[in-house]
Image (tube, rainbow, N blue to C red; front, side):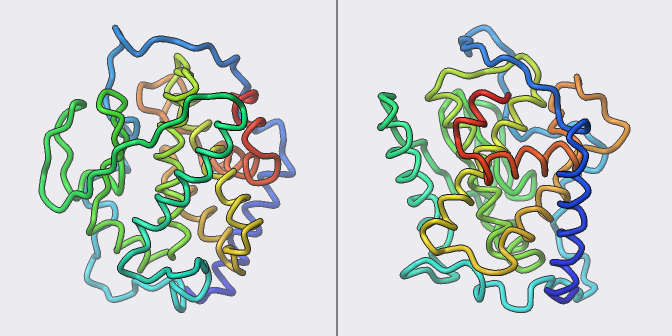
Length: 262
């Protein structure tokens, strides 16, 4: 799909989502809760029928590249295809360190584990084709699939992958802030919102280029729950409308809107 068509599609989705505020996920007061005693699993464990292990595997058709040049958009000094994940995670960490440090929080970085073969975490096993990335609150670590990282960058674009990373780091931010909502959908939508705040920071730094937000919106839509999945289901992440709205809430209004809105 050419970039102009991709941008038009995502712009249409954005317009319809933002124009329908009644479709937004209901705000739930954020109450600090202890993780101890809860049924903890990977934050990105999925229960929907569409979230299969081969969701991001190349089907062999050759029709992969949705972006004309995946590294012509997002621009960060020193960024290459080989160091994108490490550099972006470092920048996301620096952003939240400054943001939360200014608010008086004792911020610290999450762990990061690149995955090429199945590993055992405190939340259970994680394989390179289970999910593009997942966060385990028990060991405060983001597990990153190396092959699926490249797949997303090829199929959707570099900022799509950056949005995945920012979402997972958003779960670490929730841990730092002591936020653990009862419903998984609210945890996930808040992480989407936090991902949007990093996109806002990237724009302020001059890193965002034309097409980047469209990539973020598209990957958010592709990661949405099946339409028949109940919002109260364990592992629910939200519909495409909910997830795009949450991302744009952070992108347009900053981190305070995420903390207070979910």
